[in-house]
Each structure stands twice: as structure tokens, then as C-alpha cells.
Image 1 (cartoon, helix red, strand yellow):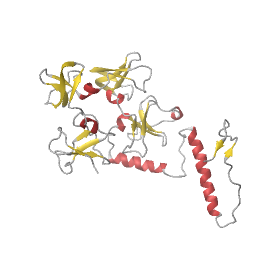
Image 2 (tube, one colour):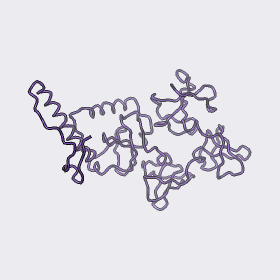
Image 3 (cartoon, helix red, strand yellow):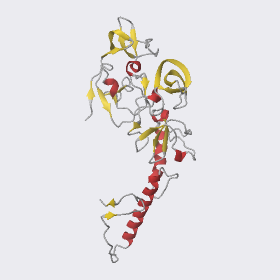
Image 4 (spheres, one colour):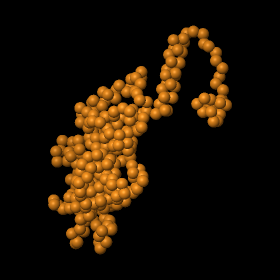
Length: 312
């Protein structure tokens, strides 16, 4: 049963939690104006056939925002979450706002990002030093996705490192991407075992440079640019990915390079089991060969010489 709520950002109709539907290309949250791809999202319950409500999306996290907060840059009064007219901007970072935490008495507005975002971020993509939010816009090239931007960003002054806010706050895992059948994990460079081969993004088909941050499935050697992973792929690109993915479902195909040393053992074991099954099938009418039962404990085995191994 779908979860339904009422929210002041869309007073005409109730909102329903979106589960498995395909979200529109480049869909953005009505409140915070950031992408809703790979996020739990509400939509209008009357959106089907209703052009006015069809493009309405609201992050579950935005739907649960508090109605008022205390803000460190405006200690005089609490700020209240309000919808703002055109030409309003955040007094902390200068960004235009559609919704903000505001004090009308003082004409002060704080966008949702500034109101809640960490000003100092400890990120595993740059564990050497903390990243500090620079709230004012300036031109830079992001050291995570390598795209140029004019925006506020997280910086490491020691290393002269600049990271988009969206990149720095991207989820570490996309649990159920629309374009792949396994979860994708955020990594911060191409794994060493794949650096001898050119790797391409499985959505845009462009090269994935070894120093990019990217999303990755180690089971399928599946790479996706960060920006591609957080924008909705078109139907044609999804079809191409599905057709290409169907090759990976062929049992007799082996993809090289192997993803890890464990993959080699998995390959050997799976092939041995397959041959054993085929042999038993061909000889099911023949006299069974009696074999001694497997010992419950093997004191020494080549795969693990340090300790005995026990059968479960």
C-alpha cells in the first residue's frame, strides 16, 4: 500500500510515495530544486493526465523538513519554511530560492542547502583533509567529475581541491538503479586491475578517466559517470544497456579482465560444478560409482594452509 501525505507545497492534492515508476528526465524536487534520481520521492496522486501536476516531485527528506529552525547567521529570530516569490535569493550563498527558511521581519532568507548543509565535511573521497564549504559562487573545475562550473563548492585549501556540492553530497550507494540490475557504489578512481584497459561509461559511452569519481558495479565491471548516474537515462539508452547486459547473462561467456582474485576461484568452482552436473546427467543410467564421504575436517588444504577447515 502506497504512503500518502498532505504537504503545503502542493495544497491542491495529496502526495503519494513513488516506488517503481520511471521518473521523468532531469526531474527535480519542487522544494530544494535538486535531482530526485536515486532518491525516495513523492509525486502528486492526481498527476496521471493532469498536466499541471505531472511534473511535481518532492524528496521524502524535503517533505519531512521541520517547519522552523534556528540559524547560526540569524540568531535574532527563528526562521520559518516558506514558499518565496520570484527574485528572492539566499542571504548566505546568493542562490535564487523557491522555498527558504525566512524571517520576514528582518528580510532574511536561507536556502535549504545553507540551512542544513555541513560547512565542514569529512569525505572518504579525500580522507587527508576536511573539505570546507565556500558559499559564494566562483568559476572552477570540479576535481570529482571534472566539469566546469560557477557555483559554491567544497574546497580543500591545502590541496587546492574543489568539489561540486552535488558531487560531495552524492549518495555512496545507489541501491536500485533503473539502468542496472545490481547496486552501484561510489568509487574515487578506476580500480587498478582495470587501468590497463579503456573503460567507458555505460550510459553516455564516453571514456571514464582513471581519476574520476564514478559509480561502479564490481560484479559486472559496470562504470557510470556521476552525472550520468544522477540523471534519468532515455528509453533508447536503457534499451541499449539492457541488450548489452543480456550478454552478461550468457553462462558460457567470461568477461576479462576478471574483477578480482575471488572471481578466479568463483569461475573455477562454477565450471567444475557444471562439468560434474553434466557428467552425472550423462551417466544417470549407469552403475553408480561409490565414493567415500567427504571428511568433516580437512587438516590441511592448499587454499588455506594456516588452519584446518570444517565442512558445514
